[in-house]
Length: 107
Image 1: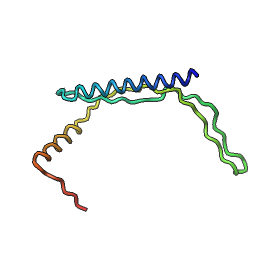
Image 2: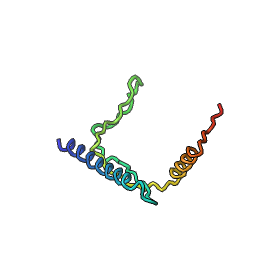
Image 3: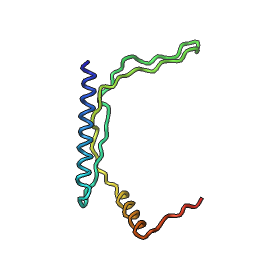
Image 4: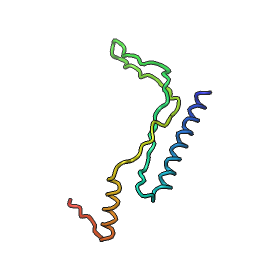
């Protein structure tokens, strides 16, 4: 019972951090020089319920995979997007719209 509650609470806390980062990105989207951030998640812990088994000697039955139960999720890191390609692509797209240039595709 406690493990299922811990799993739910850890998911809610990680989701709250994700929403905080997204709202920070939205509120600072027009700030000059602001770099967007993103959240990466990771597993907190896995509990092995049953181990793996090898195939039998006759070869008629295969082995079994181990069974594991996850015990929640956590925030691995919050990274800053330092890519300038996004800004360059937006700039090129806005110039092509402004000049009414449509790219030609040769098939």
